[in-house]
Image (cartoon, rainbow, N blue to C red):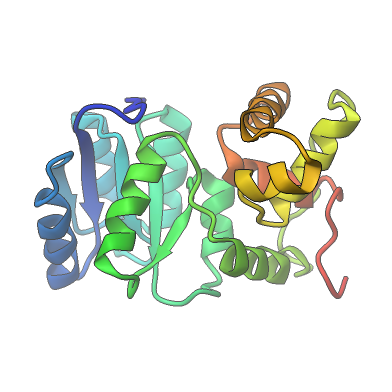
Length: 227
């Protein structure tokens, strides 16, 4: 996977089956000095092929597409380590978004988000962070984590290797707190929070915060409201 690391030009593939939407996003992103649109795709199969060919930093992926949907395409891209995936969805409680996060997406964004939010989202994901809007993501994951067919707990991770503080930080991640909010809650420096998160991801073999949120629910560390 290409790692932008917050420097240089971010290479992006835009995947959406609606021509106007796809081309609009591509034009918006391509107009940024630090972003290059490496390709476009109208379906999941082409998105995977484009990721294999161009090795972008980020694939902007629509959830619903013909031939292969965005979830399966995300699963393949994540499994091969080709790029980070930022999912696009029409509704904040889209039933597919939770599965997309489990498939390996680094976050999601509503299609009607402001242009500036889309650009910033691509930069955040390219830098290796997960895009998890606290209120929307918390509501979404809690909604689908409590569904009997959600598949939670099928192959739970073991959290036994985490320290008490790391476990506490994982809970706060699952609740949608930012690094700054966690630092204030724990009365530590923000860099200390980042260090804890890095250790959590390393110990559990997770890629980013999105996977950490899923892990917190799947292990039962955090229980959805109403369960």
